[in-house]
Length: 397
Length: 145
Image (cartoon, rainbow over all chains, first blue to last red; front, side):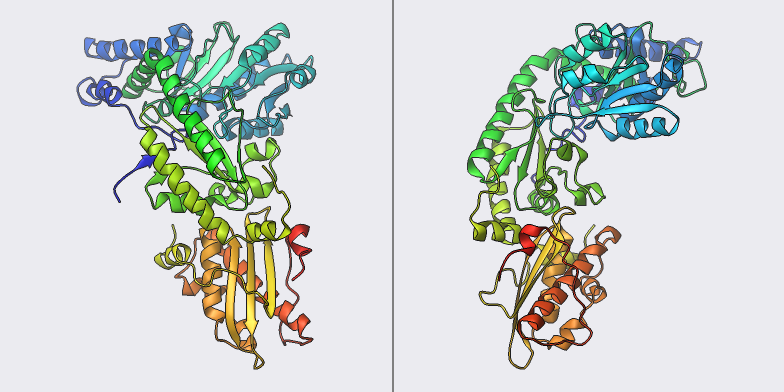
């Protein structure tokens, strides 16, 4: 069994070949420190500048508004902690949502311990932030709204334009964790009134260990990593030249092929969703039906548990993920699935399949065919399914 | 992360199913934390476990520990079955990852719950058997067998 069907692209992606080829010279040939004075450093500096421009172009930003970091989590930490510090004289209230990535949620919890107040907005059953609740949550002392662009588990895309507009009207900064969205859906920081945006290289065919924070000109957030004068003295540390070249090349490729990739993935995703919902009973789709990431499908299969499903899929060479407790290392299933109102036992039976532009219809057919057998088998040994059959009552969709 | 034995019992679980008129049946666990085990026992007049079946909702370790537990009690007397501990189940599976140890506890608890039901139905007292913790949802607790 050598076949590998990788449907966990929301976790990480394969570095694109053309991206890798662009990066390679910067390991051995052009290994110079871009900050140095001699001419050997110049080539590295040119590469960093190019990467910055490419990364900026994807979201309609200026190159000098892009600050490279070591990844999405650092960008999220920086955006929140540094904003809190810089704007605490104005107020100590932050608004976010209950379905954010832990890089946001745990940073917010940290800030709460430091005396900040955080409002965690509920989401509706599709995972969307309710705009009227957002408006109501804004106070005199609110300094920041941080709402993710698209959710990593259920794929729901937030009404960014409306959120950005509300934030702008009320004079509050708007940060968005766009780690899942950057390079996958159109994003324009000006049209969406985004003040800060986090992104990561490895989610769009770039390398791991490189991310960025877009900071709109005029936002006064300070340094988070102190040291040298890199990144206009806002983020110290020798430039990760190959990483920056990589995220730049990946952003460039994503920008050029954005519409074509979106159309291709949506077609495959919808085919996957339709087949699963039609052919596997007692199944629900998690997340918004239309406003979702092109490559994301997330299902809950009643009466079964996610880890068992993942092991059986793995034995067939299929890589997927689940929001069950067993896969999270805690006793509770995914906070996102609970926030959209799923009962625990339904949340335990979730499966996320995240596609890439490399995914084929043959892959999808193979996965659905096998998934049907796996679910039937696991239900056959499930006491919950036994009870359901015996009680004869309707237990869900 | 799992031993070969765990994988074998997960892939080829022994004694999966139900027993039509069981001498005793017990369900333990909680859908909230993601594991529910149900154990059916068929016990003859001499107090020997002639047949055992299980159903489990849970992770790979939950399935494997249930399967191993059924193997360990099959053909044993009630008293012997009572001595099958979670440790014995774990050892028979060549160990479990630390986060999965609770699955073996659940398997032990499932045996006890089934024995408790057997004792109650037959008005017996089994020495050393304590009332199991039926920490599961009402829906399952209220089922009649």
